Length: 352
Ligand SMILES: NC(=O)C1=CN([C@@H]2O[C@H](COP(=O)(O)OP(=O)(O)OC[C@H]3O[C@@H](n4cnc5c(N)ncnc54)[C@H](O)[C@@H]3O)[C@@H](O)[C@H]2O)C=CC1
Ligand SMILES: O=C(CO)COP(=O)(O)O
Ligand SMILES: [Zn+2]
Image (spheres, rainbow, N blue to C red):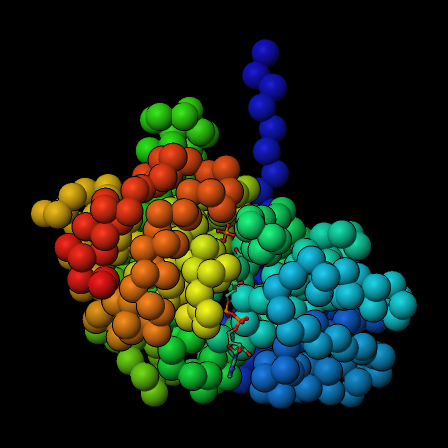
């Protein structure tokens, strides 16, 4: 008997465009969320968007509550859960970058409450994913989380955010190329389940972003539009797979390790981009497609070297040689790249 079953949980309303922050309450009502809203934000996103979302609920006679978080940690998730219980929240909104959104969606999962995603930057593809990413000690968890019922992405706010946040989002998408290679490798060598639709959607999203690179320019609101659509598409791939595999391979392990060991880590997207140059080299060799990954990053103005990241070369080598220890996810790093091989990969690709 065929007894396989799966749940693919996707957002119902994805509202993207100029000034759409003003439609947040409508987007919430349209998915029948009720009760007291709890706005989860971090300091800058609170100023650029959280306050406006809060005021909109007040104007509609609802009694919103707000909690400001600073880091992506289980402690922050716990604090949001406690606040939600104290104020008897009916649903949660995550307003901000990847960290605020991840914390809100993880808390919503625990509380079994609805969640709405309000990104203030096109910096990561967790905008619609049903995953949360949290460091804990020596490891990094990818936690099943409440996917958003609605997404409200205001391109006016996003285009106004620092440009590096948009190039970070582009790099997070470009890294899908190597993430899918790692997933396929794990399928061949370790029998890890591979989802053809999710893998193809993830690759296609990266291809389309690279094809549109010429239109992704600082100061153009259309760039925010193009990148948000790609981030949504990449998040959908993760939801279809019920895993971050379509968008997170060895390049992400490298970035997670940098977050642990670098004195001042760079943006998530920028780190995974530089990681993808090196892991593409490990997959395809010196004459392989690492040039394409490098050139795509360069075209949108994302970092391609340790120097661009502001991270010391020996820290990059340490991260590459130890990244496989971050989590039990088979990738091209296998059971570890030794130091001479890591130096070779970083040198040939110009990362160091
Ligand atoms: N759950 C998932 O599927 C995914 C999760 N992530 C996670 O997301 C995080 C990375 O996301 P980021 O957005 O890079 O980090 P982040 O949330 O720390 O934001 C980066 C910075 O941008 C600022 N910012 C955001 N919007 C702004 C605006 N409009 N104007 C001015 N400043 C603004 C924030 O205040 C923060 O200082 C990582 O923790 C990563 O692991 C990344 C991809 C996928
Ligand atoms: O960043 C992600 C996808 O872009 C997902 O993060 P994880 O590596 O924690 O699963
Ligand atoms: Zn990522």
